[in-house]
Amino acid sequence: MKIWAALSEALKGWIGIIRGEAGWERHFSLSLPGLVTALVIFVFFALLSVAIASANVGMPSLEGALAALFVQSLSILALLAGVLLTRRAVPSEAPLLRLLVPGLYALIAYLIAGTLVSLVAGVLLMALWACLAFLFFCLGRRAGNWTRGVSAGFAVLTMVLLVGMPVTLYMLLGPVAAPTS
Image (tube, rainbow, N blue to C red; front, top):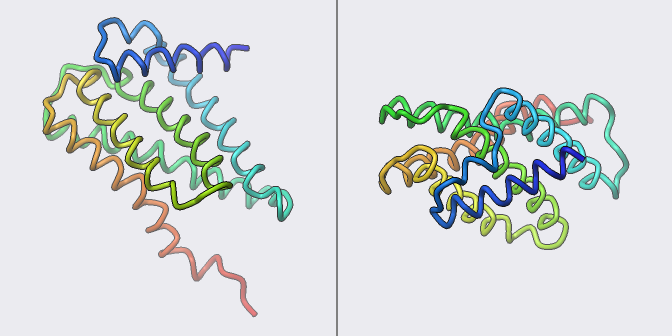
């Protein structure tokens, strides 16, 4: 039940972030255990996403599931890189977990929505990217206390990394991973 409670609280926190309300932080556990909880929830939904996406062709092998989980986890790396690079360019007083924990819950929402949307109308994924960029912008404004410009830069950088890393990995490893005839 802790998963559902954490997701419910994260939703309340994100509503507060988007509205610009004070006290949104109380809905997130901005600590190391809170980060671990968000990571566990992310892995759970990533594995569920793999199972749903492969329902028509059968569950992939262990190696295939781990590879899919790795690709899904690149979004966490994109978020971390976006936060660290933005903080390096514009020094901030905001603690790292204040940005990472809510950001992870945004990625979880994107993972859930993206899985469902890709089953129905994959073309709508671009709209989901725009929504996620907006969430990252709001995160930068509230959690990072950054200006509009810096928050927009953070959102764009994180989205470029989020979309670009899996594509780059595919381009680099695609021929290696392709079956031979």
